[in-house]
Length: 281
Image (cartoon, rainbow, N blue to C red; front, side, top):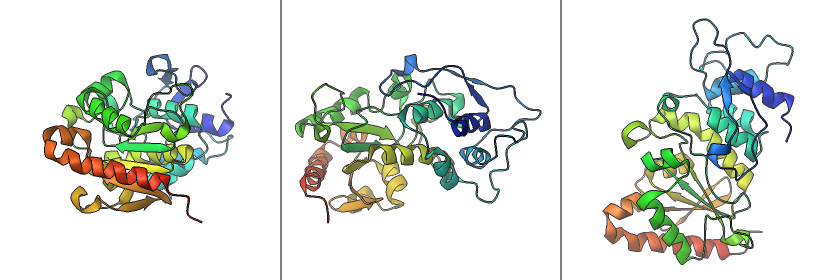
């Protein structure tokens, strides 16, 4: 797929230049093209997602060597960054995530964790942040927590695997609120969540899921803008941009609190019930 002039300007604003065409959706992280940093200007500073959004609007004839506007400039912020990403398809979005250096998490990551599953999936699971194994493998929900999640999904005849012949209503796409691992698996910082949010927003826009399952406190906060405990939010149907959303516990939490597994199963059954309802209107 050829990159548009606007997408080239986006990469230029991020201080990157493309070395090879974007990979097709489903390509493994090891096969992704590499984005090489462009020569740094004098006294460089970290480019934020907000800078990308503002710089993307600069006409092609403008001098791109000029430093980007400050993050607190009018119109800058995660909202304008989401607008800048709104033209990207799956391959371009994956590459934009891999090239992102908008916050300090990029300094210590092994690789970014974009997401996994079919882009035609009708179910979406949103988790919190990658852990050590996710950072190493480039896929969300691996290790013990991932195995538990897979068993939970299999109980509803759902899968993250892109197997030929599996109908979209049985396929799940999994993504995290953060695409890079916080050091030591610490909690995500508010500014890290804000910088990464536009990527998740675009993933949801592209996927157009029929149901979203938000797993864990930070996933819930990112999608519902609520500080209420999960125990108060679960058991009912919420909405994200018109999409039904069900709240449940993160599998890592369930491994430490086995009695809560019954509640998580109730949440999955609620999500399945909502999924089977005919669309409103």
